[in-house]
Length: 198
Image (tube, rainbow, N blue to C red; front, side, top):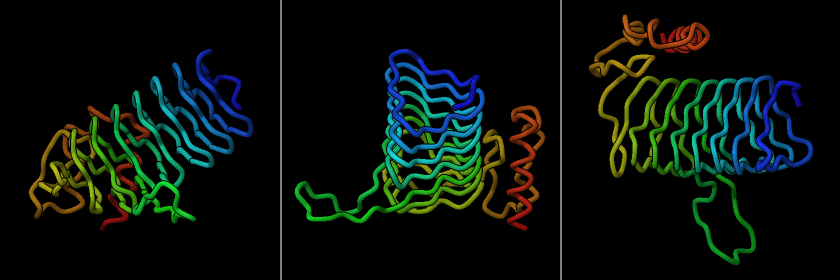
């Protein structure tokens, strides 16, 4: 554990947990054995991190979120309060066995408050899921999706400020608002993800 990581006295951090530099674990969190949190990660009140979960640098997980085994968070992912993840497509109490389904959150993506993310989905880089959505399908990079069930409604810029037409090209994903709204490190990450799409 990094010397400058913060653990609130009410939080439970189990053994063999890695906490990166400047990572904060706030009130009533539980971080289970074998999980790895990178640098500058922030866990809000009442967050549960399951065994073996890996959370990359810069992620923000707001109050009341449970991140179960099989959910993977890449760099600078934002998870709003009370977002629900799952990891079993066919849950049954008393099942003899179960098959874990993975959920992948690509760099820079954001999930709005109260959304339900069905396991087996991938949310692309710098995509955004609107609050209260039920996501059942993959969302491509730099796209906005919301609703019940969630549907893709437009493309979106790197900072999330500007909605873009579906005809927008990767070079359009950086708008004039983005340098003002994103930290330099996140802006560089967005540029790197855009290059992959060209």
